[in-house]
Length: 257
DNA sequence: ATGGTAGCCTTGCTA
Image (cartoon, rainbow, N blue to C red; front, top):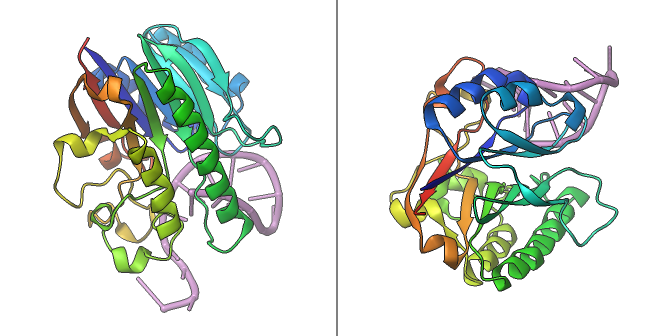
C-alpha cells in the first residue's frame, strides 16, 4: 500500500511541529506540501530527514513554494511547470516515487477576477492541462496532488452564492478544472464520498473553522492507472483544529501495491 | 460589520 497526501501548510517554518506530528501519526509514504514560503536553503530539511523522510524542494522567498516529502528518495525531479520559461513563481514540482509519478501543485489563487492575476491562473491551468496530458500518455500511475484553488462544484462550497464570482468558483475556472477530469483523471475523494460540504480549507477570518464554513480546494487527481489501485481517500480534519493551524488540512489516499 | 486573521518581513502583499 502506498499512502499519498497533500497539505498546504501556509509556511513550513510556522508549521514544522504540526507536519512532524502528522508524519508520525498518519505515516504517509508521500506528502506534497504547498506554500512552504521559504527558499530551499531555509527549509527544515534536517528535521524532516530525522523523521525518516527524503525531501525535494522548489522554494521561493516569502511566497508560494512546494515540496515533496517521501519515504523513498524521489527520482527524475522536474522543477517548475513547463510552458513558460519566464514564470518565476514556485508552484510545481514533479518526481517519481514508489513507482508513481507525483506532481506537487500550488495552483494560483487568481483573485481578484478581472485582473492579470486571474489571467495568470487560467494560463497556468492551460499549461497544467498540457503537462497532465503528457503524463497521461505515459500510461503510468500518476497523482496530481495539491492546492488547486478550485472548488469543483457548489457542493464543495459552504456558501456558493457568496462565492460565485470568486476565482476559486468562476465557471471558467471550473471548466478548465473539468478538462483534467474529462481527459481521464479522477478526483480521489469523490470516488468514496458523495456527500456535499466536505472541506479542506477554512479561512482564518470570521470564525469559518468553528462554523465549519469552508471549501474543498485541495485535491488528489489520479490517472486511470492510479485510480485502478485506490482503496480509500479522505480528508483529515484533525490538524485544522490545532493551535496555530494552517488554514488547510491534509487530503490523502491509499493505493494498493 | 467595507471588517475580520495569518505569515511574510513590508510599512503592504498575498491568501
